Every structure is written in structure tokens, then in C-alpha cells.
Image 1 (cartoon, rainbow, N blue to C red):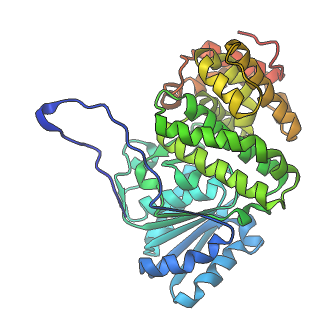
Image 2: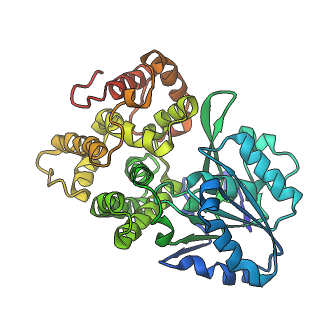
Image 3: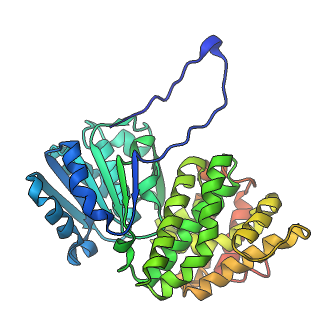
Length: 408
């Protein structure tokens, strides 16, 4: 169970500046690790379980596989597989109410970021009387009394190791996040074999999403020496495995490598946070239902073309992590080299290179910029103060898809 102490009183009312480092209770990694779930659930001594996943994984039999693994225990199992596409707050409310109605004492999330986000929030809210204050952001989730186990089937979101969950707000046409340590699971089981069936486009988008987490958290104003260790390792592994995983999905070494990228980047995201790329991606998801990883992948080179100017030394390091060369004697060239690499990666992995390709209209760009400018939590985490006008300029350049001739 997760109990959170949000107010720490220290002697003489002295103010202290400190930062916690959080991760799941247990992080288990390895091929075939899914088979250990039966023993873990027996240890928890639970009686009623809710499995939250999506229709696709239900159709291919993965949900039934987990049910079969748990069958010898003799527990009651309920399934919630109403997920198709990216989830809304209405959907997570529905899932939370089911957990409460069935009196579940364990929630198992299986799938990509959407399923895992719904699962961990449903576990945290499944015993709460009033859900709206938590879903609206008016109240922080103060603790979790229902066990939670998460099994990712993609390598990218890192949801299994983060305190964040993102949902679409249909009324406002934007995406919003719920953030609480209560969203960290008791156990995160990362089994690379579960990602083999992930199609190339999803592998590419989720993989670059993971890299975005590592890169943004590395330059975050809240980064620490510890979070940077995780971010650095994720960025070093990324260029080794991403292309292999996309173009040869049965390569288990590449799948394992990208699973590590996702986990490491997720941990650093959970503790240092992300920034402007995600802030600009949210309106694209809310207004156009553009998949989160695709939006991040497309926007990243255009955003860093601007914000990278304030973290030149970090860009020298990133260029080295990506094996792009040693720019220690020519620091300002490192940024352009990293940006060119990120843009070229879109073409290499068959992802969109402009907002035009995603049917975003030029007329909607000012509204998107206005919406992005209000994502203060993420913009404040970026070492560059982006005005609404600068955000609009980034969107315009991403719309045209020409990162070389930048309008500012």
C-alpha cells in the first residue's frame, strides 16, 4: 500500500530544499517474467482482482493468458477492456467505479501507456467515495489502499514506473495529467517478450517517446545527479536498439534494449519531469487525437531547436551519448547536430515529419499555442521561458516540416 506524507514539519520552522527519488515497490525485468505473477499475487493474499487492458490484447489472448496463470489460485477475476485509442477522464471514472463496485483488492494493468494509466488511477481511486475532485485536479490523490501490478506491452511510455497518468478532457479538448506517488505500482513486471507483437509504427513512436522522456528530464530544472544517471544510460542505449526493434521486431535483444530504455527513461521522468515537448504535444492529442508518442517524436527537433540554446553543455553530452561526435571544442554545433539527428530519425522510422501529414490545419495553430501556453507545470520545468508567440512559431515550423529554416 502507498501512504504519502505531503507535509513534513522540521524543527524551528526552517525551510529545507530537498527532492525525493521514487520508483515502484518492486521492479522486475526479464524475458518470461510474466510467469512470476502468480507467486506475487499469492504473497499479497488478495481475493478479488480486476484486470485492465485493451480490446487488442484481449483479442490476441494476452488477457486470457494472465487469467490462466492465476486460475490455480482460486481468486475472483473481473476484466475491464473498454480501451480503444487514448483514454478519457470519463473512461477512467468508469473503470474506478467498477473496481469499487466489485470490491477489488488488486488491479492488474496490461498494455501500453493508456491501459497502465487507467489501471493505476483506478487502483488509487477504487475505494474513494468522491472521484471528481481527484479527476479534476482539485485534490491530490493522498494514498492508495488497493494493490497494483503493471505489465507493459510497449517500450516507451514508462507508465509502469511513473507517478503520472494522462487522459483526454473531452469538454476542454485538451489532455491533462494526474500526478501522485500513489500511482506508482507495488510491482512493475517488464517482460520484453510481451513487446514482440508491437507493430513497427507503435514501436517507433513509443521508442522515441521514451527518448523524449530521457532527453527532457536530462535538461530539466529539477534534474539531479541521480536522475541524470538514468537519463544518460537510456540515451546511450537508444541509438543501439531503436532501428533494430522497429525494422526487425522479433529481435529479442533489440526488444530487451528498448525495454531498458523505456524503464530507465520512465524512472528519470518520474523524478525530474519532462517539459516543453510534452506541453506542446498535449493539445495535439486533445484536439486532433494524435497519438502521444507520434506528437512527441515530431515536435522534439523543432522544440529543441529553440530551447537547446539554454543548455549547450548538455547538448554536447547528448551528442556524445548518441554517438554523433565530440563537440567539446565546438559546443554550439552540438545542438544543430542533435536536432538534425532527431529529425532524420523520423524519416528513418517512417514517422510523420510535419503537422500537415497529420491533418492539422494551419488555422488551428494559434489555438493550439494558446492551449500549450497554459501547461505551466511542464513549461516551468524547461530551462527556457517559452512565450505563447514562441510556441506558435514552433508549431508553424513543425507544420511546414522544415527544421533547417526556422521561423522565430
